[in-house]
Image 1 (cartoon, rainbow, N blue to C red):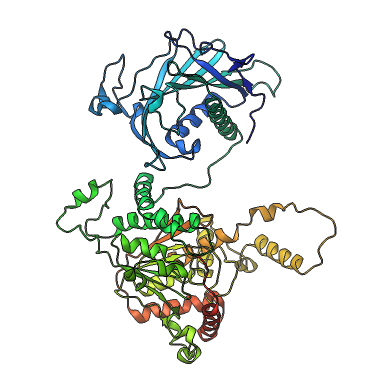
Image 2 (image 1 turned 90 degrees about the horizontal axis):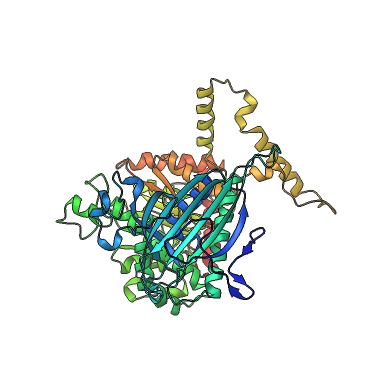
Length: 602
């Protein structure tokens, strides 16, 4: 746990709590506050306000027991906010329990008010909590003071959920003094942050409350210093779906299937990962499909009625009917099981059967099939597919043509089939989702995927030249010179003798090089873009580091089969630099070896 520099504990004095007014807040109205902890800081008021705003909207940062906060009221969106205890503006339209609790600090101006509901991860154990959050500020000759006060809508300590400190009020204070020193190091200013409690009557200050205060103050300090250091968030969640819709569906499915599947788990792998990962993916798919398709049960309901269900709906009322799904490389089958049990028709196949399949109901087992995928385009090549796959392990196969046309293609850690996912979806006039894991090329062999397809790389260079009006030299058409040189250097080092002494520190060129996983995701995305899918990317809220997904929406209508096949053949030969016959032979040889391996837990 990170330690705040020069952390000062003001809660104990000679073994006894030191009770004091919330010093520097003047004349609190007959209330006794306990300042628990205080620490110096170097981030200004703007950073403090930004950190507190983020913590109010994302309480899961400070507590792993929480999913999110639903914001019911924000005074910045209210043209006539409530003042002097009167409910005006938007407040008078809220239910009584959702209205902000008024609270004033003498000498401070209240600048913003939120009412939020804290949503727990496990609603069976903890109940939601409604809370008012006030922002206050004060300016004087000594500097600037900012205070954020949390007011839970709870009257007694026994009614407080486990994930929230059992206090009636909670306050964060930031003090900032601009330095007048001529020293450049001191001219920026200096400040401090502190956390204070207002206890329920008759409730003592416990060790748990002190630990909670330490954790909260550490989080504020860490995030504030991060803003000063120029930290920028790199991963942006909930780009495709609202967080609330996904998490509500996940909570329901987890309650329905999570414990049952975990207790019946027969694989050697960890059910805590695989079960809840697939439940999370199922939750995401269900909500995406509700936006993409007209689902069973929507008949007789207007578009407005469908949109009113948790904000679900799309601007286009003429959505196609749900076409069913196919999970290529379905692994343990948990994803197929959950979707089928939820009423979504589909099936899945894998090169190897899993022990997990046998724990599912009979009608689910019938939808889980052991099959090898030999793409139909290899049948048109000079490869004797029937003879090559005559071994018992390879007799059951599919050619990648799915019925009915437009069947949604799911590729979840499908490994050898990952790069093929956009191509298979294109051949079937289907939409797809791909969640990459291990990097394989279109022949099925392991490789480090490039950032984009060869055609996309060349098109990007041409667009850049056209925008900049630059004539590219012949030697520049091979790609970025520095990147090519870096690859050559790495290749030469791989074949040279290892140094007896030296450093493992990466060079600047190596630091700039994207990871193999990120390039694989980019490569699959570029394949989908080249085939004219409407592509969206999302980072899924699942317990896996391989959590990026690519959604390809097919909106091009039905295209001539021969034209589609020819286009895919051209991509395969171009990307691998070999004939279709050679690629097909390699694919089938690897498929035979794969079918003979024992099934894993995924």
